[in-house]
Image (cartoon, rainbow over all chains, first blue to last red; front, side):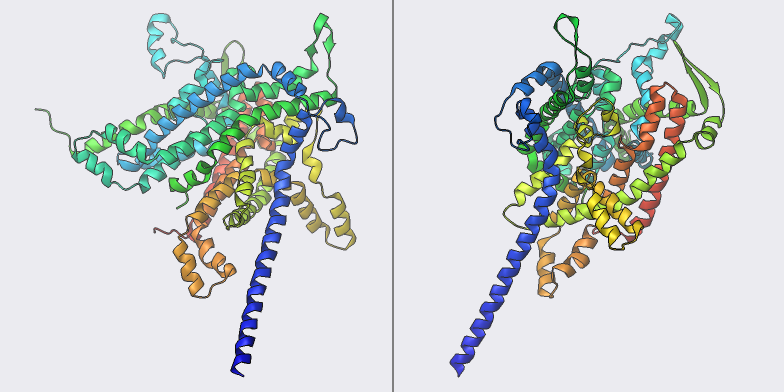
Length: 331
Length: 295
């Protein structure tokens, strides 16, 4: 009898284990169905891009080819590279993006450290101003900013020349990359307010003991920042740098207004459709691409534009979550 | 004899040294244009070879609401868009982040896919993907936006006597599913980082006390990430307000393109003040209900 009881108990336990296992399988199936269906919506346009860009033009019309082309060609992509002047705009974009991002990280880390570690008069007010710069849409100040660069007076110093020249000494920075570098250098580049906020949150959470030890050892304030604070905030620095790279790479609004020409990947891509409509062919006759060809070319252009950021993202992806986690933004 | 600086003044100077580059940039690249914009909004501007301003007082502001036929409508449209989008994006991104925080073998792949919008959605490519007005005008191509239209679902629901208002709301959601997904990338990252920051000891303690997954989510996870909900709400409001497909932003750009910069400045000032007030109200309401771990 005792034996029978034991058996019953064991089989009862087995069925509980079975139930649990069935439930976990069901949960996993449900989860995957849900995630796959949402992932399809995100992947769809990218897959569409790839599928259009890699198929020969005649297969665009072909009703038997829906997703996977029967043969793969790089003709569309090579043609688009030529039309976009891809390599020249690519290196231009790389320069603008990386220099601006590096300057942004440097200026924002400095400011964030200043706001987190020192107390000075009007600190709260100034920090409120940082938040203010995040909230004001760029459209509000774009026209006067443009004038600012068009008649750049060296932070007001040019006004000092008024008695001698009869007008302030100004130079035009419009159409130069300085329109991107200068604001970045002074902590007012694209999304800089957000980065200052992130750095301040991080440095506030960083224990002060090591910096105090450095002070006692005779290290100056700035050297303490360089030797102690920066190495300890590498993860945050890389994260902010990556986000900044993404924003500068994708920027169209500022680039097209300040630099006024199709000289980064984003602006070249945006100019592509207009280019295809009015393209002048050999012998001066206007070659108009038909809708399908234009569409294929534009999809190839999109592919060319996002591939570098996606590659960067794939290599550095762990920083996108871990970095945010480390910043203290989430505490 | 020169008096030695006190520790406090020294600190203040050092602090100011760190903040100074930003401050200079703020004065020159932000405050100066901002003040100019405010001045423009009270003036009539003529752009010839130079800029001529004539003071008109509040006339631009009165025009914006009185005689301009579209501005008020666009404001309402963008406000209502924000009202339905923000809760949906917050709910959706929290949901996805909770799932992505679980341990299962394919998690890595899904994370990559769900973060992709973060690196793409802010660019020109997104405009082309969505086939929005700005690019539609110069492009003949595809309109992916309409891929997910809920026409047949609408018919089914209407024929089964569901009230048209609800059907409309549902179909708006489904039609903009694409947009919602693509604009949740950053929010998912922030939520996920927050979820990973919840100490595992809390889960153990809750399990010992007999909490199941549901209890744990509402009693532990939700309060722990409530500050992030506030952060994400503010982030989403700013994102929807400054998105260039926003009708008001488009309308402002139209005037800027016509070089009617004083009116464009007026419209953007009004818009900015409204968004500022909304964010302030949301912050004030939410901030009291948020649970802060360190407080």
